[in-house]
Image 1 (cartoon, rainbow, N blue to C red):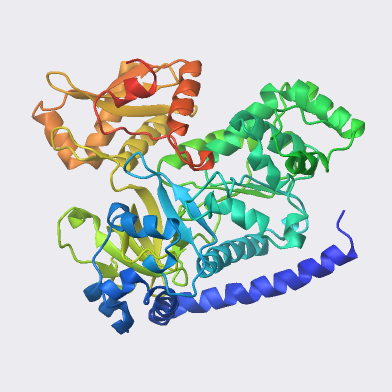
Image 2 (cartoon, rainbow, N blue to C red; image 1 turned 120 degrees about the vertical axis):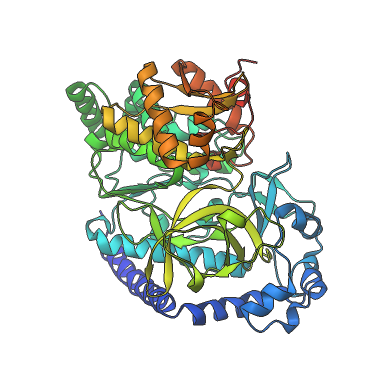
Length: 548
């Protein structure tokens, strides 16, 4: 139970967070002013770097000046500059006095991962976004204050750059440098990230959490929350025994200090073990909904992630779910302010934002729009500039404007710009596929299921949807019609017989596990893995399932 000092520290922390939130609300009301301030902070750290000097950033005074001075850049355009910074030449991207704390890593379009320079200013922005998000959550759910939280963070030092700077997950840095009062309420120690086996990490998080009265769980990917609950249930006998004996029966890291940190919290707890055993006997399973008093969950809910929400309820109960917003290793874009919605308000303090209309984003020389110029219901590709040294960086996330708070847009993530399949000009997006399957699933009242689709060459070609459920050809026809209703190009290709009807095949449970193992091995940080729902290359589904 929290003591007097905990309550006092929490009160002080909430007062500080309240001021942070009020400043954020003021920035949303004054979008142009907030963007001008973000531009000033960006230039203070980057204008004197070699990249900044090449494009004359010292002379930039407004966002319009920035658009005229520097080109829109992909990561591959910026990679030579980032590689110089990773080798120790910080001035390639930054002013002389700027420090690089680490490099956050994320998947790239080539075999080489993308390295995102993490500076003190970038960390401050990233943390401020999380603090704003968390304060609004706790204002909406005050019963969760001063109760344990379960979060899943990665390692900040998966490897090292030539300069010696760590390369890993920015969540690891944030967890290590979080305020002590907050760390006290982490259900599991941050050193869980150093367990070598991913399943052991999931097990350990739930083993520590099973002893606590967890108020909420937070992670980016809802599939991670589902997998954690499944592992705890399948290993429930071992978990209950570990709680009873004060043990952690996993392969521990080699580091003695990390072993000690993982064991420091472990104490025999036969009373809690007996309570968990009663839950398992009563319900026939060990689900978090039956042994935690959850106030809410926080994770992605938009795009292809929406399909996991019903499974979340199966394991965690019918609790509110708050989307964590459009958030990447490159920075934060949006902040959701309500439960149960997939849109978030643009965070105008996190960087300078531009948007390419999605319909013309592939055209060379396409012009960007500023945040206050966006139109309701239109789709855009995000372009950002922030203190990571990424200037006019094409993030390639496609968002839809669903509303406004004043003049600041509300943005819903749809899909990655490159996640489009078009073998005969149909331009099928992942979000269209997910929506079509969801429409049919709800209409037929089917339980949630895993699925992934890919084009298949034939005469004519067609889309094959691999499913964890055994579905009839009538379901395939309904999904096909739902796709046609959303995508006029798909409908045209179907009507002219350039595309054949979509087909469905059943894939066994163990094959889905193998697929996740293969695909997650390609991701630099395991916690960043998102299973795709659509492959754009014919045969990519068979390759992912190990069928070719």
